[in-house]
Image 1 (cartoon, rainbow over the protein chains, first blue to last red):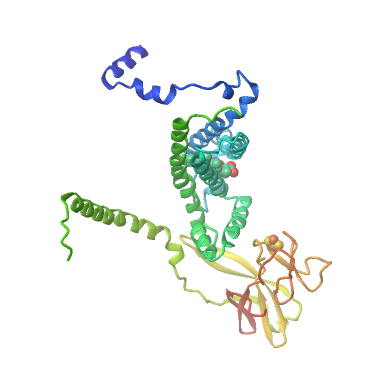
Image 2 (cartoon, rainbow over the protein chains, first blue to last red):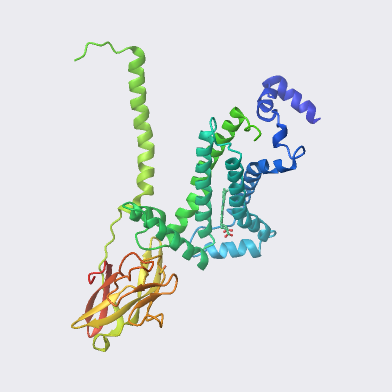
Amino acid sequence: MLNKIYDWVDERLDITPIWRDIADHEVPEHVNPAHHFSAFVYCFGGLTFFITVIQILSGMFLTMYYVPDVVNAWKSVYYLQNEVAFGEIVRGMHHWGASLVIVMMFLHTLRVFFTGSYKKPRELNWIVGVGIFCVMLGLGFTGYLLPWDMKAVFATKVGIQIAASVPFIGELIKILLAGDATILGAQTLTRFFAIHVFFLPAVLFALLAAHFIMIRRQGISGPL
Amino acid sequence: MSNNRVSRRQFLNYTLTGVGGFMAAGMLMPMVRFAIDPALQTKAEGQFIQTSQKIDEITDVPVKVDFTFEQVDAWYKSDVTEAAWVYRDGDTVIALSPVCKHLGCTVNWEGDSAHPNQFFCACHAGRYEKSGKNVAGTPPLGPLDEYEVSEKDGFLMLGKKIPNTLV
Ligand code: HEM
Ligand code: FES
């Protein structure tokens, strides 16, 4: 049945070359843990992506209940965690995933560093990787404020204070982050929400696409 | 006038780039201006807030004076309580902001018994002299802010926060 549908579509649109081009490539022996167990270090990039997918999915579902407003944000998080079926699980996925994605990204970076994979011709992909690293930290920083509890507010206060210490443009960065010259409040929360849920994920997708296209073009780096 | 002919290709390149640029600018300009509005807003400030501190009860020992005002945070209005460290220096009354200039914790007068006559921040052991001057070698990089001070019916009034004028 499924085969028939596939053939019917393939006959008209010739889709086989599309997915073959994406999926059909060799995995060399030196990156395959079935050959050398130590090759598991090559899994960290894929694991980072796996957890990123979890973050995106769980985050999309959290926005079904979450409200980015100073009066209701905390209550909406309390409600989705304690009253909604599996709320604890979905919030837990996003909460713990946020830390785990940083750990995985760090291990992946270590692997790339110690296998020397950043060297020519892969310098550009290292640079894109640094961009992804920064976007991830930005997602962690902006997401942390969203539950709007004491810890979130004071952590953000400190974070914005650190940003404000940048020479010359620090004050401007502070106002653009907080949405107000003196108050960390209603406009900070809506801004952080917009940045967390729309702006940074959009940048992340673009960088991930560049990352993967380059890997596909250049292949995985050779054995040590 | 140059007498180079403009080719059809060049003409189309210029006009399409120009029109495209206008369209892109027309789309981006409103959004960018929208996003940076907080940085360009000027607030009508400088209102003095009444405190319950009698002027003639202020001594040369700093006391913490709480004061409450209505804060307008975009669409959200709330009563906010802040505090100032207030003391007398000769004829003038001085009110210092308790917000640490390191990372924004709250400082206390003689908060550390090892350092009398100083403000102390418990977060990272930042210290300030009585004038608000930060003690070199502790984390804060600048002096405590000051409040504008005035008086009404014998009570202390506090105005807006200004950079420290004493140090
Ligand atoms: C890889 C990317 C992401 C990271 C690292 C991340 C990180 C975080 C963190 C640290 C929090 C605070 C959670 C807590 O303390 O419980 C949070 C909350 C939140 N995030 Fe994300 N996030 C990511 C992607 C997304 C995406 C794509 C969306 C939506 C489309 C989203 C929606 C939300 C929402 C609605 C909250 C508030 C609910 C809550 O606090 O439980 N996140 N995020
Ligand atoms: S916040 Fe006061 S010393 Fe760090």
